[in-house]
Length: 126
Image (cartoon, rainbow, N blue to C red; front, side):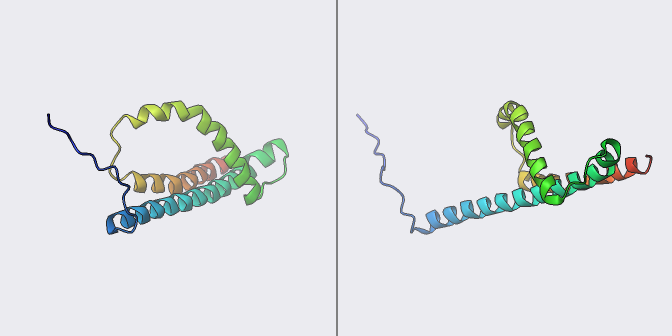
């Protein structure tokens, strides 16, 4: 009977392959943290601008600072992420695009600017 020998010894992190893989994971983690910070700041900025254009004159509420808008944006995203979390599981079964990191980055950067631009157009009709 042929027996298959399985190497159960742990990989040595000092080997070049393990170190490169570890640094790649750390680089990806740092990139994701930077994307999250940029997204939070841009979403907070967009929310504070749109709040000043539409909510302040309509409901006579005070302006939001960027820090307050970042916090409010995080709360809104927390609720929205929870609501759409189940649909994301279905997406994981589909083929992921090669350039999903650049697509995510452009989505994070462009969405607040597009929202503010469209709000600016609507603001001029008020």
